[in-house]
Length: 69
Image (cartoon, rainbow, N blue to C red; front, side):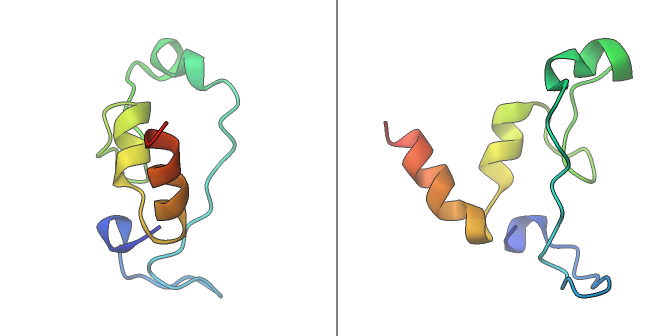
């Protein structure tokens, strides 16, 4: 996910810059269910847009192309 999200803690075959992204099903109910809208593994993103903007690495090209339209 890039340097900005890296925790530099390898786990099994993943290095400290690789993460599994959980399914986004039900994301629209996050505030009602969890009482907040914080995202990412450490809650640093306050909403969906911030979570997207934090991504780098393999997601960088997709992020840039999505915001250029």
